[in-house]
Image (tube, rainbow, N blue to C red; front, side, top):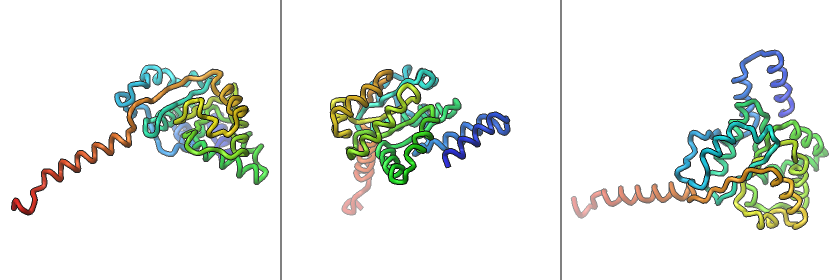
Length: 230
C-alpha cells in the first residue's frame, strides 16, 4: 500500500540502509507516473512559448519548499503531461514525496473512498505528500459530488502541499468542469494564490508527427515503381 511504502522509505532513510538514489528511484515508482519523462527529452523548440530558463529554475524544486503551485495550460498534445511528469520526477529525485493522478482518476478515487467510508484516510495519505500532480483537468466534467470532493483536495492542499495542474481550459471555462460558479471561484482563489503559469501554445506533437508520417508514406508511394513501368 502507499502507506506501507512511505513507512518503509522513512525507516530506510533514518537507518541509512540502502542508498538515497535507490530510495528516490522507488519513490518515483510509488508516485505512479504513467510513463517516465525527463526534461532532457522535452522539445522546447516545438513549444517556444515555454520559457526554458524558467522551467530549469522550477526543476530545482524551490516552489515546493515555498508551497507554491504550478499550472500548465495548452491544447491537447502540446507537452503539458510531459512537463508535469518531468517536474514530478525531478522532485522525486530530490527526495520529495509525489503522487501523480489524472483529474478524473482522482475524482473516481475520491468517490470510491467515500463509498467505502475511507475518504478521511485517503485525505491523510494525500496530506503526507509534498507535491500532487493533477493531469488533464478539463476534458471530462465532474458530477456535483465529484466537483465538491475535488475542491476539498485543493482546499486541504492550500499552503500545505504543492500542486501541478495541467488543463486545456482557460480560467473562464473551468465552470464547465466544476459545474458551479461559486465552487469554481473558490477553487481558483486557492489554486492561483501563489502560482507559476506556463502556457504551451505550439502545435500538437501528435498532429505534427502524424503529418510527418503521412509525408513519408506519400514519398514512399511516389518512389515505388508502378506495374506499368516494369
